[in-house]
Length: 254
Image (tube, rainbow, N blue to C red; front, side, top):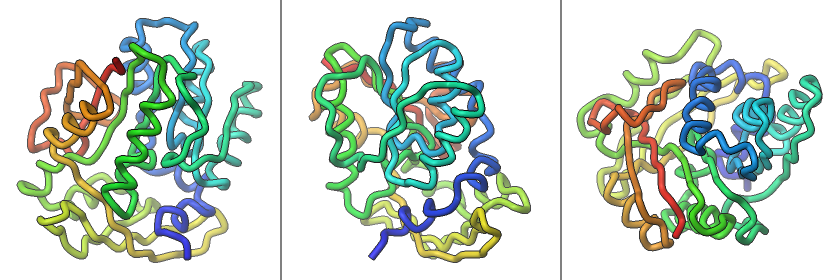
C-alpha cells in the first residue's frame, strides 16, 4: 500500500509547480549561493528535489547538482523542464532513507519538506538526516527547511494554509494536532495533472528547534544554526519565532 506522500506526488508535477509555496525559487537560490560562498566548483545534492526547481536554477547559475526524489512523476517533470532549458542535470530516483552515496558531495539542500519530515515514523525521518550526512564530505554544508514545532502551539495550521492558498492549489483541513507525537493529521484535497480530484489523509511531523540540533549533533554536525524560513526570502536576519511555520537549518558536517 502506498504511503500518502507517494500517492500525492504520483501525478502532480505540473500542478505542484503552480502551488503558492513553490514560487520562491530565485530568492531561495540567492541565499544558497551566498551560503556556499558562490563557489561553483561545489557538487551539490538536492534531496527531495521534486520538479527540480532549485536544481535547475542552481545549474543555470553554474553549479553541478544531482537531484534525487522518490516520485517518478516529479522526476519526469524535472527532466522535461531541464530539457526545455537545455540543461544537463542528473535526476535519480532514490529513497532518501537509503541513498547510495558516501562522501561524494560538497553541499546538500533539502527544501520545502523534501522527504523530511513526511515519513510515518521518527526513525524514518532520522534515516533521511543520516543518509544526508553520509552523502557529504567533511566540512560540507547542509541547508534544509522543516516544520517549526513552535508554530502549532500559538497558531491554527488551518488558518495558515487558508491564507497562503490560491483557488486552484491543494487545500488542507487539519484533523487534529497530536501533542504527544508533534504530528498534524490532515486531509489534503488536490487536482492532479489530468484534472482528476483526490482527497487523501496525511500526517506531518513538526520539530522543536532543540530536537533538530540534537539529531544533527548525534550525526556529527557542528555549527548548527536555525532561523525562520520565509518563502523566497531566506535570511540569517530572521530569528526563529513562534510566527514561523517553517524553520531554516544550516549545519556543517565535521
